[in-house]
Length: 171
Ligand code: MG
Image (tube, protein in one colour):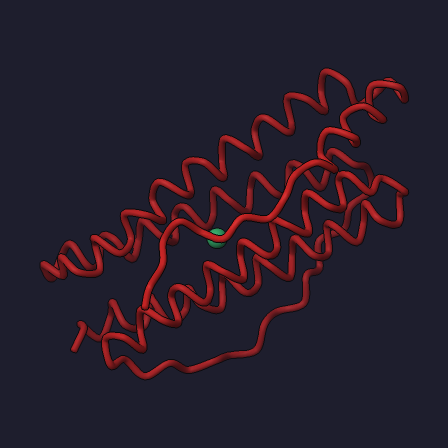
């Protein structure tokens, strides 16, 4: 059995990852309405990845005989006035998730729960990549977002993103 605090935090993370998926779907929806289907594609794939993350936490808990409790997923209530609002919100959200993962890691470290630490290693690395992706997107938008032709090209670029399953697989 895992430590109770670690268990609680893992359980909360399932909800946070599903909320992330919901938030990114909302962002995808924003861009779909704007007619920027490449951006919509990028965020929809982001949502799929978040759903995968939720399932990994869910599976890890079940594999360790931890009882999973599923809570309500909050409504994505961010208001986006301009495109950049979405990108900034994405980065802020990833920074929040990174902090959350690090909190679980710290709790596992405290009780010498090496198994959970090893499980979380993948997520620590993943969060580094998520933040980099969010920052890169902001940089590109700053450079090209104000020119319609360049925005069109950027939209084309983002339309090429394809979903790939996470490299972490739990049986
Ligand atoms: Mg995630």
